[in-house]
Amino acid sequence: QVQLVESGGGLVQAGGSLRLSCAASGRTFSSYTMGWFRQVPGKEREFVAAIVWIGGSTRYADSVKGRFTISRDNAKNTLYLQMNSLKPEDTAVYYCAASPASYSGAVYYPRNYDSWGQGTQVTVTS
Image 1 (cartoon, rainbow, N blue to C red):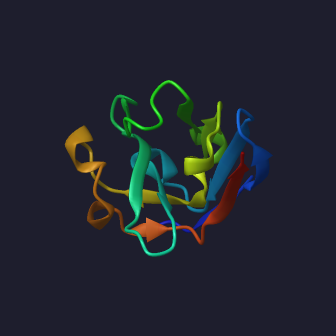
Image 2: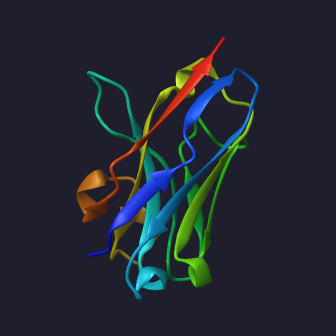
């Protein structure tokens, strides 16, 4: 497992941008598929984006395609989520997570991730 710490959340107006970061500990970061999920009170945790460690392919939820970009810097053990054109419905706590899975079909399900950060709040005002 790896330890994960998110940062970069905050309050932003609709149409604005934020970049979330997720710092990972451990020397095996590059061997993990990494994902971003979000959750609002009373709802299940929702898949946002993921990047598979083999080949670097990415997957996005339909609701964020074209607005969010996931990336990673293995030299810095850091995962990023660039969020542009933010909408009020993007308001949530955002979590990064690490998975040993190596195929893209696995990235959508929280059960396939074995390490989670503590979350960072993103609030988008209209």
